[in-house]
Image (tube, rainbow, N blue to C red):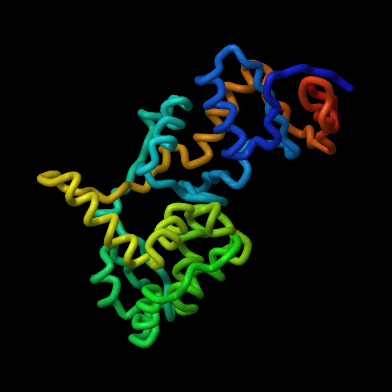
Length: 265
């Protein structure tokens, strides 16, 4: 078994672990960063598939460009020139209901006019104005049903499956949408919080046209992002796949990580 010292040991080479390593590489270039991954490949849930002239995703199909950190990550991966964007103001989502494709508009009033859910369920959405915040860390499914009603669960499922490749019965709303939870806690209602945010943004950006964010991916699929981040680590011998971690414990001056192929301090 090998023994290797590092300043930081990251467990897991999914997009979170690879991002941590990339940001540390920029912020602390002198630090020795090591990433350990249990599986044979890096990237976690992100995995693109090309075949028969089609490009598809086994996991998330993209991410919004309204987060400065995500734009920084694209820069660190050197993928600025390979971005493929779909501005939400120009492109919309579709959901299959009753065997037919139904458009999901990007503006709330237009959504209410669409025959996506019955009027009773649309009125139930307004109960968000009076529903108290859920305590603890509810799942996305629990939170959506509590705030807006169970009729919206299929739409939440479509959104979170496409973005996180996750199960809304297991994903925690605090982890995937902390901004919505903050609106809920601060204003007692997501609807009130959204309108407050819109008024504040309108006052701060008078004269400027507000744009909706764009869904972002890459010419080679989402898999290009973890692949490029991993390649940088592999070139430095800092990424060890097929090397699952079995134990982590404190030792003098730091931590001891025991993995399948070695011990790392």
